Amino acid sequence: MDATLETGMFDSLRLELRRGCLIVAVLAQLRAEHYGYTLRKALADEGLAIEESTLYPLLRRLETQGLLTSEWREEDKRNKRFYRLSRDGEAVLTLLLAEWNGINESLHKILKNNETSA
Amino acid sequence: MDLLERYLQAIGQYLPAATKDDTLAELRANLLDQMDGRAEELGRPLADADVAAILRAHGKPEVVALRYLPQRSLIGPTIFPFYTLTLTRVLPLVIFVSFLAKGIEFVSSRQESLAHALGSFAFGLWTSLLISAAIITVVFAAIEMARERGKLGPKWHEWDPAKLPAVKTHAAMDSSAKSLAKRVIDLSVHCLWMAYVLWVPWHPFWILGPGVFYMDSLSVALAPVWHPFYGLLVALLVVQLVMKLLAFVPTAQRTLAPMKTVTDLLGLVAVGMLAASSTYFVAAGAAADVQKIATVNYSVGIAFRIAFVFALLGFVKDLWQYAKRWAPKERLAF
Image 1 (cartoon, helix red, strand yellow):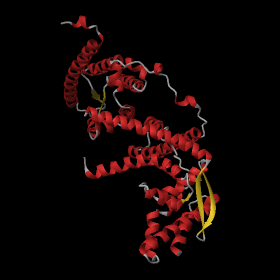
Image 2: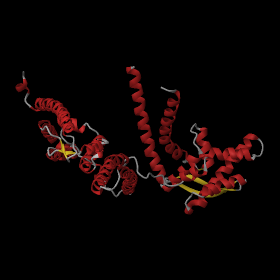
Image 3: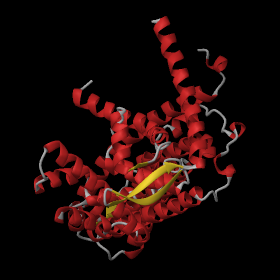
Image 4: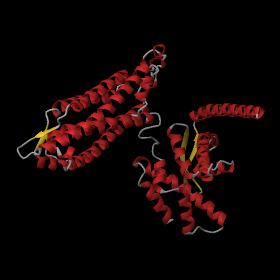
């Protein structure tokens, strides 16, 4: 396969894979309170780098869906919007993590079977 | 921080009024924190170029703003396949109807030139296609909106395997193997040919070319044999038109093969009628050169007889293939 095509295809598939994980990661990280900048830094420190222009609108969307709560507070002489997981958000996160673990387990089994039969 | 304020102003142009101030305040706070972090890394205050780099990495103002708007599709992935299917089915029909309407107008007009007719057809067709595509898009966008709001109901995507059509036979598959576009082109070309045949009696130049002037100079006219031939030709074209229309009806595919045999037979009779005749042109005045007319009649007669032989051979071959397909195999065991 052409190297450019391969890179392009991989990037596209990687984006699809990360898109599904992003919401779970953001909800999980917001068990503790964060504002946009610190949340992005916290996720990047854990190995999940996300663009600001993707993260900030996502936070707004999750809040509109009732999964997050937010409040404006002054910190370091600057007004910042702090986000935290709501009660509904915690419930949804629990379900998503169960789903995530189920998928993870299935994937491990598939890979193990492939290794055995290879 | 002029650059930052200009950036936020540009984003604000695309944000909804209700949430604009709130969104910009949040963006300002986050970007300022990002700039503070960058200044700390560099160990100095940020220059305009550093700020520009941060803003460039953040994204174009329009793209950033659009991400804050509700994420929706005009026609979503669930409905989109039906949308493209509708376009591919309807637009060829629009082409055919436009072509038919223009063809009828052209044949009945007798005053409009062919070039003008083709030009007005092309222009009218473009407008018709655009309007049709726009209407289909609006309808499907409305369906998508209804689906998003849960107004379509659960039954819209249910289907019953028992209602699938039966497996097609040879004849039906041969016919349906032709794509819709090919059938439309076939029908359109046939209509063009019919329009030409119906138009030619009043415009003999379009069949004889410059020969029509030669004919005038010879003082000749067409013999009576052409009248029944013309009638038979028009009947043949009408039957073929019906066949080409039936090609769009899946349940009518069985009738196509016998109808083809009928048209082959009509064609054979028409050519046979001309082959049997010996007079194709007659003297139209005292100035006519009778010997020249006789020579032309003789040459044309030979041409029609050769054509009849080939038409007869083709008809027998097609009849044999038709019989082979439908007769029980044990009867053809020779």
